[in-house]
Length: 110
Length: 121
Image 1 (spheres, helix red, strand yellow):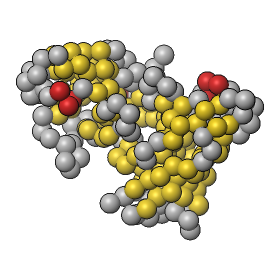
Image 2: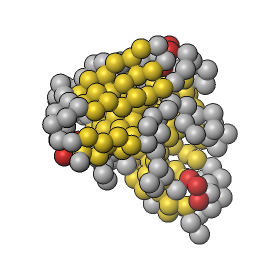
Image 3: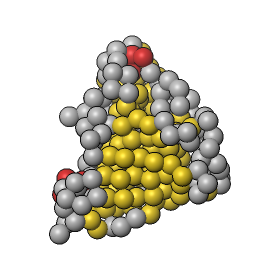
Image 4: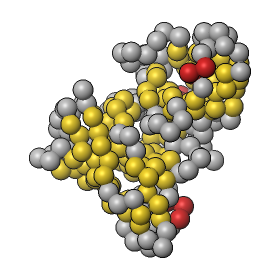
């Protein structure tokens, strides 16, 4: 059981758009920034979005992040087969003074 | 370009202590802007944050692991380390080290490649 709730899987066709949700509470997402990570098979996670909606250098603008209240959303447009990966949200849980991850969402590009 | 590299035994016996070191290159571990953390991933499962430390030794631990975990930093060597005691098979995982931002939110922007640690007799 994870503090942050993500759908286990999402899928869409190449070229389409997909969104992945991350639901938390007032003690985590409600009071902290959210980050998102992409983990391709067999590799280390890679930072996609930080501070809710910022993209690190080198991350294409097909990837976007937003936050509202106690939920956050990752959006991916123009889906490519290379986007097939696991995606994780993460934030700081103030009540625990600890970082917490969502359970991860497997993206399939059909 | 900042790089992190985990090192340590790939096999640990049950009830013993898992010890890993992360060597940071291309940047200083003494930066006041960042913490340095450990994250693990059991085979086929999700990510679990373990602990983080900054250059001055300030630490934060996962509540579920706190009783068994020690994180430390060696600034002259630009390294930080993880010790997990009394391991069981459920501690089998890929262990990653990463740079963690300080402030509101805790993004991890640089990761090591990960090292698989198997707990087995």
